Amino acid sequence: MERMQDCLFALACGLHERMGESSPFRSIQSDMLCEIVRHIPIVVPDDVRTLKDAMDLGLPGQRILVRRGEHVVGASTRYEEDAEVTAGPTILDIHQPVHIEGEAGVILRGMLRMLPTSLGGSISAVTIHDSGAEACIKAEGGTWVLNRCFLLSGHAAAIRAEGAARVVAVACRLGGEGAIGRAVPEYYELPRTWIDTAGSVQEYGLRKHSCYGIFVRDEAEVAAEACEVSFCSESAVFMRDRGQVVLRQARLADSVTAFTSGLGLGAALKVTDSQVVRCRHLWFDEDRPPSLVWTGCEVSGIHDSDSRVASGQAVAVA
Image 1 (spheres, helix red, strand yellow):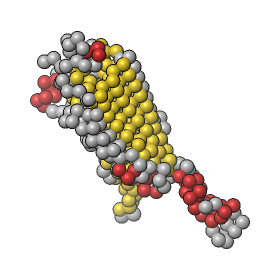
Image 2 (tube, helix red, strand yellow):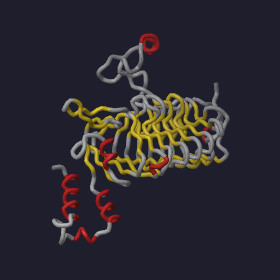
Image 3 (cartoon, helix red, strand yellow):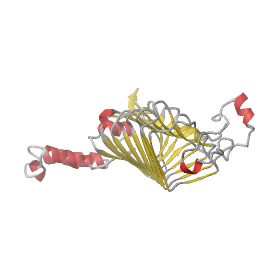
Image 4 (cartoon, one colour):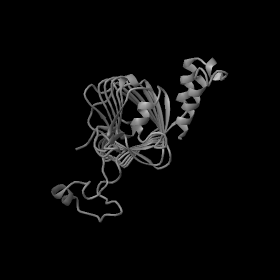
């Protein structure tokens, strides 16, 4: 019997009117019992087969440990003709607080969507591949801490924060897979015109770019510390409405544009002790958020020729 089931069985016996007559569990209040259970990790796939199954079983604030391997985030276990089937969508809605931690080598395929009711939690030491969804992490509410994660987006965004969500990323890599014109080891180098006329980068196994590393809108906030945001085909950081972004000791690299202010400009951008390297433009155009702090940063390999590049105020040069 798996560990989680063992623990729940022991608790049930201790609370039983007859079997647990002299058990100290009977003197513990229900709120305290819930607190004990939520700190017993649910292990995927030891205790349950999928991450969604663990979310369905867990209490608010539950710890979930994901074993090494590839996992489709929205898959669940069901039985068809007495056979166990594990299948499902590549989007997992998170509606309550949760703490997810991965072993070395964990890959989650799909998008984790943090609903406004989720309140917050943490995700540590996992690689998330968006598999065609809007983002690897789409935070619609709550406060979420990402630690030592690789959010690999080949389509829209690594992190998309909206509503009143707040996301804190520490020591994470955000963005695309690598230089788009270079083949992965098992494929030969191919001219880019072949890809444009004859197929997709997926078909030829080439590395894919993310549109955005960090995308912030509405009243949302994203803070990234000691993170790399790279290989973005549109912009490493995009902000609009009243969104806010804070970068500290970050590295923005190998993207078409480092920063973009969209509709509403965003409320504030603070960049300290960071690097911007090998981006075509520092800014997409002349738009800036009303509050812009730029201190202790290094800029190199930018194609813009405007003298204000070093101060973070450069405009794109056609």
